[in-house]
Amino acid sequence: MKISMPSPAFQPLYRQIKELITQSLVSGEWGPGEPIPSEIELASRFSVSQGTVRKAISDLADAKMLVRQQGRGTFVASHSEERSKFPFFRIAPDVSSVQSLSARLLDCRRERLDAASARQLRRPVNAQGYLLRRVLDMSGIPVVYEEIRLPAGSFRGLSSNLIDRYHCMLYSMYEGAFGIRILHVEEGLKAISAAQVETAHLDLSVGEPVLQLNRVSYTYDEKPVEVRRSFCNTRNHHYRNRII
Amino acid sequence: MKISMPSPAFQPLYRQIKELITQSLVSGEWGPGEPIPSEIELASRFSVSQGTVRKAISDLADAKMLVRQQGRGTFVASHSEERSKFPFFRIAPDVSSVQSLSARLLDCRRERLDAASARQLRRPVNAQGYLLRRVLDMSGIPVVYEEIRLPAGSFRGLSSNLIDRYHCMLYSMYEGAFGIRILHVEEGLKAISAAQVETAHLDLSVGEPVLQLNRVSYTYDEKPVEVRRSFCNTRNHHYRNRII
DNA sequence: GAGTGGTCTAGACCACTCA
DNA sequence: GAGTGGTCTAGACCACTCA
Image (cartoon, rainbow over all chains, first blue to last red; front, top):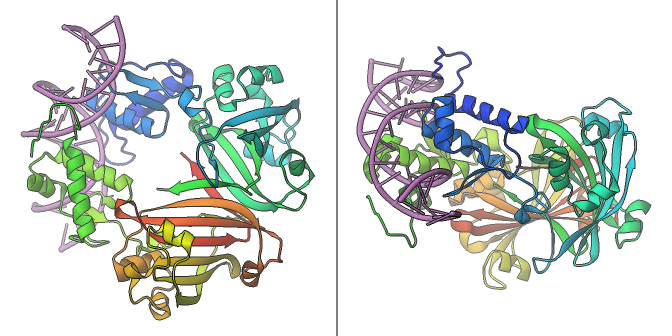
C-alpha cells in the first residue's frame, strides 16, 4: 500500500484509507449502528499500521460518520440511537432547559419540486418530489412549523404510515427506511412577518415576527437530499448556537 | 514526567501537556501572533515524546488557540491577522457573496452594567462597565446595529479614540490593547419587532421583523468578557450556519 | 481473560519554508 | 541546507467492556 509520489498531488496514506472506509460506508458494507472491523483488522486489510488507520478513523469520527467506544469497538453513526433523536435541532426555551419535544405530521403529499427546491437539491425543475408538513411541540405548545421537500427518486414509497411508524423522526426514517444518512446541514436564518400558513399552526397573529430557517441537509459526498423551511415562534424560545 | 495512576481520575499525559501550554498562553509567555517553541523543543522541555506534544498541540489548534504552519512553526492564534477581520460574523447577503463590510462606532460610554449583562459576565449587579454602540455596513448599506457591554475592570482606559485606532475591529482591539483573546461565542437568535432604536440605525420601519442576536464571548477558561446584542435587518441578508 | 480502542515512545523519512 | 510541522511504523502498555 506504500505509494510514494514526488510532490504534485501528494496524498497521505491515511487520506487514502479514509476514502476506502468511506466507500464501504456508502456501499453499505457496514450498516448504521453496526460495528466496523477493529483497527488491527483494518490495518492488516489495508497493509498499514494501526496508527494510520486510527488517524483515518479519528477524522471520520470527527465528521460524525463513525462513533468510537473504548473497549467495545467503532460503530457506524446512526440517527436511530436514543441519544440523538433530534440531532440538528437548536431551538430551546428562553427560561429553564429540558422540556418534552414531540413531532406531529400534518400531511405527506406527492408534489413536484418548486424551482428553488429543485435547484438546491440539484434536480431538474419540476422533478417529482414529496412535500411533508409537520409541527413540533415543546411541552405541548406548538413552536415550529415545517415544510419539508424530498426528491421522489431517493424516497420512493414514502407515506404517512411509514412516517408514523418512525414517530415522525425523519432523519431516523431516512436512514432506516431509505438508507440515507444525513451528515450535516446548512442553514440560513431570517426574521420575517408571519403569514397565514404559519399563524394557522403556531400560536401567532398575522404580521408577528417569526424566525425562518431555510435548511439543506446533505449525505455522503455533499449530496443534498432534503430541503426544509421551518418557522419558529420565538416569543418564548430562541435558536442556540455556539461558534467554535 | 511519566505519572501513572491506578484508575480513578486517570489523566493522559497529553492532557497535562495541553494544560501546561494553555497556562503559558494565559500567562502571556507567548503573545498573539508569536511562534511557540518547536515540537521537539517542547518535547524535551516536558520530557515527553514529540508525538505526545503533537497531540496536545493538535487539540489546541482545533480549539483555535494555536495555528500550525507546516515548515514555519506553530503560532498563537490572533484576531489581528488579515484573514480573520470578522471571525464570528455570519451575516451574508441573500444573493451574491463577497461584499465590502465596514464598521462605524456610534458612541462609547462609561455606564454601569444592567442586571442581565452583569449576570452573563458573572459580575456584581451595577458593576462599572462600558457601553459601545456601532453599525455594520455591507456595501454601504447599514445591516447590523449592535450594543456591546464590557466589564470596566478588564477594559480600563477604553475610549472612542482607541477604538478608532483599531478601525472598530473590536476583537482585534481586545487582543492588542487589553491582552484579551476571544476564543468562542455563544449566541441566541430570535425574531422580534423593530423598536425605535433599531429603526433609527437600520433602514427599517417600527414593527418590521428584525433578527436579534444575543451573544456572550468567552476567553480562556470559559471566562465571559463581552455581552453583545445585535439587531440585523434580514430583508436582503441572512444568518448562515453550518452544523457539523 | 480476551478483545477493543486509547496512550505513548523512538525513530525514520517526507513536505514545506526560508535564508 | 537547516529547521519546521506532517506522516508512518512497530511495538509496548493502559483503560475499558463483556462474557
